[in-house]
Length: 208
Image (cartoon, rainbow, N blue to C red; front, side):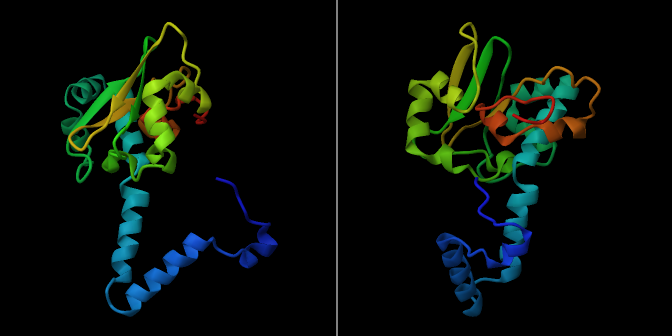
């Protein structure tokens, strides 16, 4: 995302984008007519930004990295293990977790629409829903990964998992070297949304 601001002295002069203006106008109209409770809107936004989102998935990954027993349960029954941490609900009823290793790199796509594990990743990014990603991820996954900055060795198998309304996938990325001394919270801070889709790797410095 590009920053279209012009410095702190002029931030108040930046005009919102057309979609933002339309959204705000629609919200104001619905609130004015009593069709929408602004507190409900605030609660919904807060839920997806702070409760339902990539930070939940990051906690799942970090727990798996530090707790071998949890990792075993996670790979055996993703939905049940994720629910242990309190993350469950719509779009996350049937979860399968696949592990990245030096020999296997997994990535997730939804070729039909944009099925996505909301409870652990929040709302899907725009590129995940785009036709080019949905088609090319299956046809030329290494090329797509390369465009995301991920070079997969030729002797590493790339597996593409197609999410559906019945099953959604979460990638358990490899734990980066040099993080042995980090605690669970510190590890969770390194994990990105893209690494849990499989189009990025987790770096010890936090940059995927």
